[in-house]
Image (cartoon, rainbow, N blue to C red; front, side):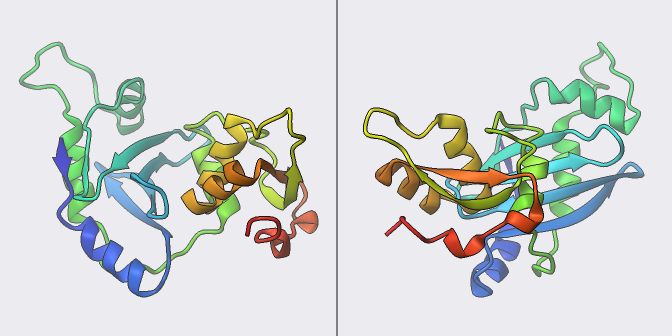
Length: 197
């Protein structure tokens, strides 16, 4: 487990400003990365995303003591390629994810300066999650499911990533699915709280 020592300061600033999501950039070995920190889901989520034409995202689940697993799974080899690091069989010389996490921890801002829109978050998180209709990123309302049909799991994931745990739980409770569109002009955030109370 890796424990972030500076993420709590950012989280305190976010809470004081009633902000639940923030983005910030950082550099590692001369390579640009972008982070999204999401606090209205439990556990918290920290996405580290590469830049360029074929970006990928690494999801870190963060507990309430700001700890996370160092295991990167399939993203380990992708990260090595992005950073230009050659894999070695010698375990004593092998790149360790803790090096990236420690560098990130040392560069986490203590002040929240950038609050991303929900559709920007969906663009990044869809690299990591199987969300329903990933290319539709503008909320346009709710659909009440008939009694014999439940809200789909990947619709709940999309709702949770876009708006947090509270909206996903209310969606399940009322058996309503979030509706999405390709067109920004059809976005209707005035409907976000309709049918949820």
